[in-house]
Length: 75
Image 1 (spheres, helix red, strand yellow):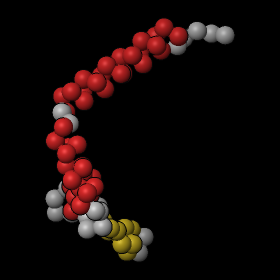
Image 2 (cartoon, helix red, strand yellow; image 1 turned 120 degrees about the horizontal axis):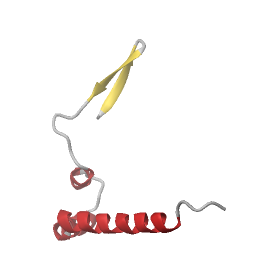
Image 3 (tube, rainbow, N blue to C red; image 1 turned 30 degrees about the vertical axis):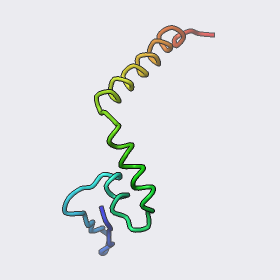
Image 4 (tube, rainbow, N blue to C red; image 1 turned 60 degrees about the horizontal axis):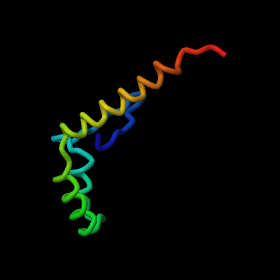
């Protein structure tokens, strides 16, 4: 959503033609220095969605294991 205008008691919302990710918004923003953009591009190329998903699932499994072990005890 790029903006909204109140017309009487309702809001009229304005959206972009094509949705953008926060990553692409930062790369397009003129106030962000080129050094930051370069560093973001390098980090973005190193990220692997499958590896990230597996890491998240592993961390969630650890949390569930702790909750299962200690979660339902009454004091």
